[in-house]
Length: 184
Length: 184
Image (cartoon, rainbow over all chains, first blue to last red; front, side):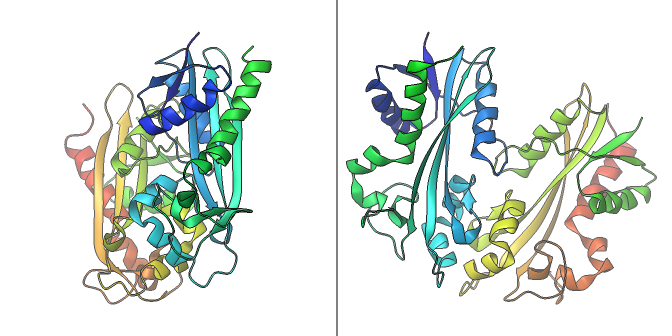
């Protein structure tokens, strides 16, 4: 049986393939973007998306990620990618001007689904803080987020980021389940 | 044949029923929220939603509305209601601090769908400006939006707002089509 990971981002596919390879799990690339619904819950978005993708493959993986900022009631949350495309890091830093509570977390939800079975969900969370300015060159919100216990932003960490990331946590949690229990 | 307008907001239902009554079109209330997908296009969101709702009724209407701010690349756009719940008008005004170009528009898209036919779309747009502070008591973004040609915000206009609103424009456009061409 082949597991297909659905993403239109080839870099993301390579990153996840490398993580799962450490567990002896092989995935193929499904170059499709499933239907993403509007919801405050990444779990709901990923589950719905995975079920829709079963028309392309018998066994699929999808992930959805968001940055949740406490002082902004979770904003940008499930709409992180739209918010990044519009107001960007500059907008987030402006909204956080004068705000003392800088707490935020990255959350990644992985949905695994096999035809005939319900989706199974796995979560990876990394707590941290929003910086006061952009630091480092990196993708998305990486230049304005420092994980708890570190001085550097995700963007300044380089390879180190992939060792502790929310995405790695979620996919490792999937891998452990798949190898022990797995789909029944 | 009965047309069902799907919304979980009873005030919105009453407002739309009153508009369509002027054209002799009677609607019933479908207290359901269809699946809203994530998309930059209100048209895509409303069409998808209408098609899903056909499982409840043979002839349905849905609407989706957004506030699009030029200087913020259209933000909050299709995610206006989530953005309102999180950063609210305070957040929008903060993002607009020091921004000279205050241009924005409200857009309402109405999707009409009948079983066996494709959805038909109707649009209502009202151009205007983002104020520098909240003015008037009103719902959503009404206190920070002044329509072009007026000094008052939507929130300060009272009943007058309903006479010129983006929602009225979209539903009037639907009504004229329904009475002339209609579904074939």
